[in-house]
Length: 197
Length: 160
Image (cartoon, rainbow over all chains, first blue to last red; front, side):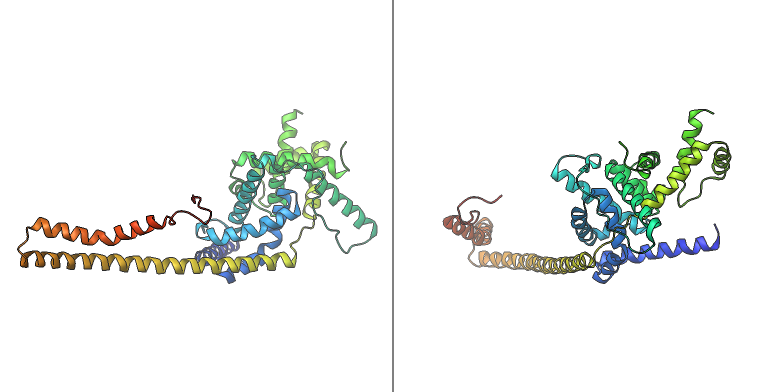
């Protein structure tokens, strides 16, 4: 391992330790900072996981309340984001179970519920339109994927998590994560060219 | 070329992410891609899909963030107060227990002294001591039963 990698690893470990210490104290300033820092990532994950923006926003708030209450359970050997996403995931599953007894496998498939994709700004004419159409198609494709595939794709390609981290969040074997990513990506491929019949 | 070879190549393409592929896999994949047009197309599409996936703009509103921060602060305050109350109750319980132990010892000695002065059999003053100690709890129990309200709510039903 080179010096830069070592430096980043020790900086991350130190950050995790500081977060763990602050969470044990239930430090509201630290939580404010963490909410700011992870706002977009957490919301994006929840929107993709639930398929519904409104529900995702409710779960977003509940997740942070849970982080406050259970902060002492955070193990600083892991990264905070992995633990945060696992907390959010468990809350989502609890919510879905309350609504209807099911696991994450049955987590959505409400085809009418639009994945909330606001229009992007800037860039120019044709390219922008093309790119936006493609994004919308992929967003529509995501809506049709099983929740566990969506989750794997979001964690991998939007959050840039390692396969091991995803396995930690989803609590499934590494092989399952690999297969979900592969299948999810393959299932999205037809959507890139337009909605499949 | 056998179908498993393409499956393997596509798996590797899909899994190539933040971490690099192991050297041997990378070399094998590069060689395979040179020869296989279908897998090259898959790689291109996967790349486009990932780009499109990353470009889906989902952002938290300012109001959501500030509402969450406010709720978290309020809950933190509640938990802090709850912990303070719990601490007060613990201290009170400890003080009451210590007080009860000390007064029980003092009372025991007092009853023994009175028993000796009145030349009573030890069993008599010991029963007296037990009755004295139990009387407050018995009186309180009888009073509560008499009022018949210690378990019932306003409508007279019992709370779980």
